[in-house]
Image 1 (tube, rainbow, N blue to C red):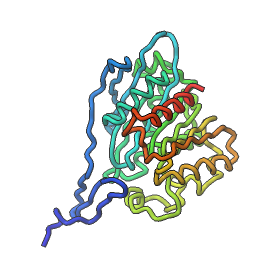
Image 2 (tube, helix red, strand yellow):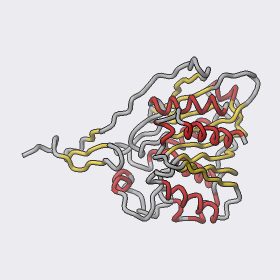
Image 3 (spheres, rainbow, N blue to C red):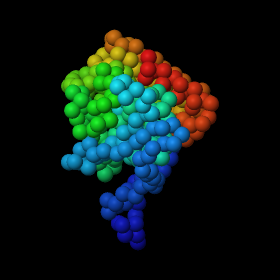
Image 4 (tube, helix red, strand yellow):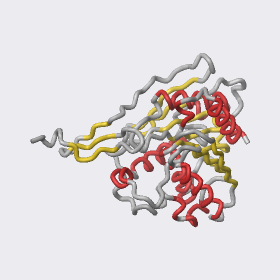
Length: 305
């Protein structure tokens, strides 16, 4: 008879392997997160470095700075939140390091790619709390006397964007709602970029039910914003761009979000871009494809409009 140490209680492989839980409580990740160090990219001139954001929770962020032509100029600031079903990946993994390097180079923005503690060891809403802590850390530089010189010297705190993909887009949306209800002193949130956002619908979702035990269910507005349309009127920005992929299983949920925001009474401008024939976050895995480059151009235009 298998011992509790080897007997599997639950296994989560929704569209790619995530983790399994053993009966003794041990968690085994089925896809480990690779990391790469910060760098000075020779092709683009983009510099990156890591900095501690929260000593209490040992959370860091990776900052990205484009090649600066005018050291006195202030450029848009993007706070980026990575995806990975709330369970995998990090700001320091190769796909996010490479994507942020490309985005910062193309759009000429400064970016802060933030870390959050991951489920299931740290169930939701901990990721939301960690993201808000990181956002407040960034906002503490609004008077240009914060601990990070790159932000003090180069960020335009009147042109701040939240951005994220998949689960990170979910978090970015919720941070925009929180900024609307709680306020965010020190910066002006102009826009939000949601790339292939991970939202729920009315169908059961075993993963979310496991990693978010305090959720109120399918219609919890943190996971299913379209279920609470009136709350969307309080989004604390003037522009939103939703990007969906034609073959993504989450596409319809992104479209439902777009339609819900339009109906909510929110007085900003929301646009949606669909890339036909592509799967979830294809641009991370095939960044040199023509469709990925076209999407990068659209994202860059949104950040500089």
